[in-house]
Each structure stands twice: as structure tokens, then as C-alpha cells.
Amino acid sequence: MHKLSIKVPNNEIIINPKDIASEWEKYSEAVQKVPKNLDIPMIINGKKIYSTKKVKNLNPSNGEAIGTYQQADSSHAQQAIEAALNAKMSWAALSPSARIQKFRDLEVILVKWKYELCATSSVECGYNSFETYVEWAELLDFVRFNNYYYAELLTEQMGDGWGETNQLQLRPLKGFTCAVSPFNFPQAIGYNLPLSMALTGNTVVWKPSDDSVLSGYLLMLALDEAGFPPGVINMITGDGKPCLPTVLTHPELTAVNFTGSFATAKAFSNYLYSSEYPRKNFPRYVAETGGKDFLVADKDIDTLDTARCIVQGAFGRSGQKCSANSVGIIDEHIWPELKEILIKETNALNVCNAVEKKCDVGPVINERQFDKIASFIERAKNDKNCKVIVGGNCDKKNGFYVSPTIIEVNADKHELLSEEIFGPVIAIKTYKKFEEIVPIIEQHNYRLTGSVISRNETFLEKAIPILSQYAGNFYVNRKTTGAIVNMQPFGGDGASGTNGKAGGKWYLLNFVSQGLITRRHMRSTTPTAMEKIVQF
Image 1 (cartoon, one colour):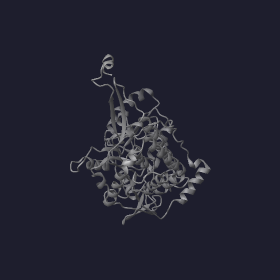
Image 2: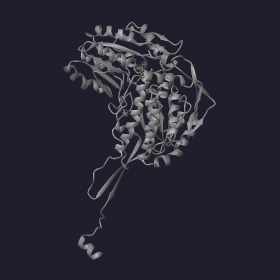
Image 3: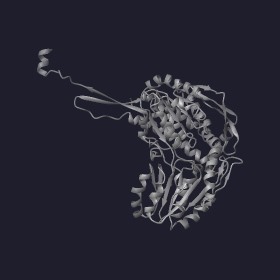
Image 4: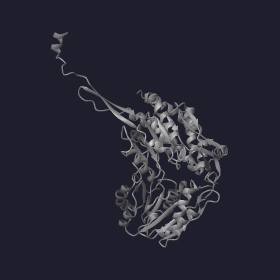
């Protein structure tokens, strides 16, 4: 490959549109232009495909329909598979340089569509303006750094053996691939899953979350505008049960890139590795699932700063992050002081429609998730071992709103300490001795993010080697959320997934097949120089 002029990218600067009048004006204008009655099609082989079954697309901030989308069935899945397979040979045959150039075309469009992308995420998924700007920046980081990483990986050199030359190839996988993406980062994670697979020469059947179909459609429009060949990425929509088994059991499926729940990830793995379904290969499987992410606070802390770390980590994006801080493990000596500040900081948050300028915490994504979160809170209210110290209000009369909630837990074992809630709820458990911390964390098998906060270096020197083993991304003196591409590649193991580390150089190796070509330069029959004089 001729080396392209791709230098190490700079991370996109994150700004808050609430602080810049011109940004807020452009964002607000884009919000008004988000379609309200669009029947969103699937895109298969570059064409709009509609099904007979339509599903309402709801705005979680007010519960109103903003259009409809298609419920895919097995026939649509089969169409998408065939489109991906038909597009594979020509797409894979392009040089890596050509594919990188195409992704740079896409990058320019995503920059130009910034306000529409952010507004769509706010209206469709209920994320406030700042959260959508953060996500848009992360999306650009993924696109730019993946291009750079791919170019760098392609220049990897093997050792030079005596009389031999070695060449590493990063080949696209055989067959087709599949991406299934979540609602909670519909553009950053949602776009990165299929895009990273396509960059490396694969063709993709993609099912975005049924709570973020409009965001998914915008990517398909951007791909068309950038001139991507039809069939490289094919979008099917709706609930996965009627359509995904056709994809997951297909003998030519070679990789699945998934972000979602642990239960769904397990179900997918049963399809991928069951002997019931014939396979030509062992499918690659990258799964990023859930988290029960902890923050440990020593008694020697800045209580205001720690409170803000907890509030931002627990309630940002309405707690709908797999990295959200859902357990606080606090030294009992500092808890009374920290508790007072936490209550004040939490009560200061504005819970309202995500598109309002004052919004700090928007709605949760849908009624199903609302009911799940509300049931945790209701059980806590009726549990003698729990005390709701702030929040606890749930209202779905006009949107799906759960107030930021902090619950003291006075039991050694409890569902609030072990189960993922995926909402704006954090459980607090105090400890007397350091040895009590690990058993709290070990109540579950999630190993995604964790944090420890202390001003005492002796405490940190003891805590970090132990606690860091319980998180794929571990932070010291900061919140549990906010991993940045190229700085903190993201992922965990255990019940949190396969630890593929999106946002890092090696993530792309999940979607290539490494080949090695060795050429020998001397035959066993090569004569000596004097023998050659006689022979010639």
C-alpha cells in the first residue's frame, strides 16, 4: 500500500452548545427540522425496503410518535445477506487505500451534518444537547482514528529471515458480517460497529436498536452521499427476534459485532457456536455488554469533587451507559459529609425534555426500561435495608422520566449492589475496612469500569493493584464514565463482554484474517560461482 497522508488525528474538541449562542441556535434550528411523520425504510442493496408491519417511533421526552419504522422478518434478513454477499468481492478487492479514502469522504459528510445528527439523537433518544455533542465528537474520533489505525497496521513488518522475505496480509474475513448496535450511543457506538467492519473490507448486515432507527437511517443516507457501493452495509430494523436468527445461523456468517445486554449476547453465542447449525468457520464474536460499575471513595477525599464525579458518572445520559456509576462504596467516616453534598448536587439537576436548554437529565429510552427502573426503586422503598435519600420519583404521564436517585443499602448482599439497572440510580454501601470492598464488587461478574478516589498515596498504592483487576477500564481520582478514543480504548471481560477495546488500534484485528506470505530466494540446487561459469 502506498502510504497515505494520514497523520495521527487529534481528538475532536468537545464543546457545550449551551455555552455558545451560535451553537445553541444551530442546534435548536436542527431540532425543529427533525422529521415528525417519516416512515423510515430499511436499506438493502442501496434501496429503500418497506415491510407490511410498521412500528411507531416514539420520542421518549413526550411519548409522542415521530414516525414509523419497518419490522424486518426472515425474508428481509435473507435479502440483506444476499446483498452483502454479492457486494463482497468488489468491496474486498479494493485496495485498503481506496477504502480509507472512501471513509474520509464519509467523515466530511458527518462533519457537515453535525447539527442534524445531534438533534436527531436528542429527539429520538432523549439525550440533552451536550450529551449529543459529546457523542458526535466520539463518532468523528472513531472514524478518523480507525482510518489511521488501519493504515498503521497495514505497514507492520515481519522479521527478515535469511534467504527469505516475509509479508503480512490483513485480509477481509470470508462471507459476510453482522453488527447489532444499541440505543444508548446510537451514532458513536451505533455507527462504529458496522463501519469498522466495512473499513477492513467486509460487507455487513446491520440492525440498529429499534429505539434509534432514525439515527441509523441517517448513516445509510451519509453512506449513499459518500458514494459507498450498494450492499456494503445493509440496514434491517425492528425487533431482532423475527429477523436475526436467519442472520446468526447462516453458514457464511464470519463475524458478529454486538453491543447490548448480557442476556442477548449469550443468546447470540448460542446461535454462533451451536453444533445444530452448519458452519464453514468459527465466527468472530465481539460483544460489549453491561456493567455494574463501582466507585470507591477513601476517607481522605475532596468531598465536593467526589460528589460531582459520582453525579456525573451515575446520572449522565440518564444513567444509560454501560459504564455508569451504579455502586458507590464509601468509607463510613466520610459518608455523612459526602452524603450532604451529594444530595445538594443531585437536587440541583434539571430533569426535563432533552431539547430544553436547562436539561441536565432527560428521559429514559422507553416504557419497558422505565418500568424496569421504577420496579427497582419501588422495591427499595419497601425494603427495610434500603433508604432512598434523594430522588425516587418516576413519571410516565408525558414521557419516561426517572429522577436521579441515590439509595443507601445496609445489607451485605442486595440486588442494588449486584444487578445492572441501566438508569439514573446509584446504590451506596459504606465500608469500615478496606477488606470489605472486594466482596461487595464480587457480588456480580461485570468487569467494565471502576474508580477509586483518594488523596492518600498509601491508600492508592494498596487499592489500585487490587481494584483495577475488577474493571477493563479503571480510573483513579475521576468518574467511571467518559472513555476517549485513542486514550482509553473501551471494554471489559467477565459478564461485560469479550473486551474488544473499541477505540484502540487492535480492535480492527477482530475483523481481518491475518495471512503470511513467505518467499524463499535460494534453491537447494543453486550452484557455486565456479560451477555457474562452467554451466553458463
